[in-house]
Length: 94
Picture 1 (cartoon, rainbow, N blue to C red):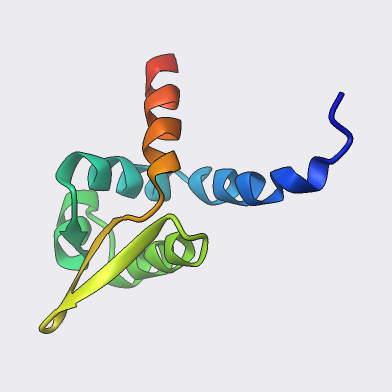
Picture 2 (picture 1 turned 90 degrees about the horizontal axis):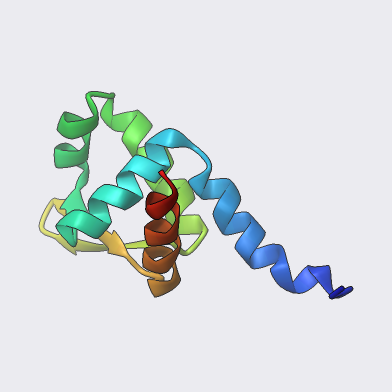
């Protein structure tokens, strides 16, 4: 057994962030779309913009997504390629 469990802390944090259904939905849709802005996400999820923004902030802080500003809009995309592999593995199970 591997006694150095601390090396798994980053992965554990990513899993914690992805454990929320809205954030998981955002990530899956970003993987499908490539990139997206808050207005589009708000419409698709049918939740307030402030709620979408809070979830995006948690995803950004965890290093899962990144945003690129285009005028007044910010387009978000998946930053970490490991997320694509992880989500694909999860979706195979469902």
